[in-house]
Image (cartoon, rainbow, N blue to C red; front, side, top):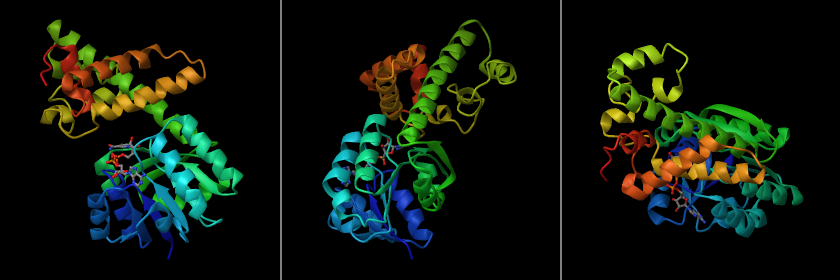
Length: 296
Ligand code: NAD
């Protein structure tokens, strides 16, 4: 039986750890939050008293933490010192590319195998084991991480060298954020020009304006019944998390002198929406900022 240390059992990590338990792994959990730890134990994991206790002797380590500073601190202060020399280290958090590469370099310097493996898919996908993992790191490390990640997701894709998983994640989400803003402003214009939203949807979804933000996640209620727009923009992918990913994308773009005007525009709009009290709403609620109907 493979023993897996799981650090960070929040909204995402709790479901992921539960799926590793269901797959027959021995999961040793640690989280700073006692409530999160208790939930993991209820799902079949064993509670550890510290990161180092969870990691010591484990075959694999999975981390699912808020941001780069947490990931750096946890690996530098505890994981590296406690991990078995043949353990596979997997960070599934969404963090800045620089931090992901820095942790990978430190792991390599110690002869440890590490991959960055951020996810696409939200809390429901984490609980249902249907996440998509995009993985950065050496091919041998990817080969070792893949069977573990496959227990938590429907797709596991090797994106390239260290940091490439994070690069793929923020590029994808920058495209998603910009395309959602474009879709939302287009539906506002269409309506102001007298077009019925369903009729415009039927046309644009079969024409060259077609995109995922419209056909799978339409910001106007009606055309896509499963979209958060039909439940007052509750659930789904919070505008605050979209803003986090857009900020990571802009930071990465500035580091490599890439021009990303649409990503920057989307970041400014999600920042304004958050400032006006929209952070907790699904990110498609940006349409309410654009049509002037937003009230916190
Ligand atoms: P969360 O805040 O619910 O969970 C993070 C957990 O990490 C918390 O339980 C916290 O107590 C714990 N933690 C923080 N510092 C720690 C430390 N030093 N040691 C141990 N535990 C520590 O966040 P989440 O929604 O589960 O997201 C986790 C990551 O996944 C983030 O990087 C996020 O951007 C990414 N992500 C989230 C979603 C989503 O829909 N929620 C989707 C895709 C990716």
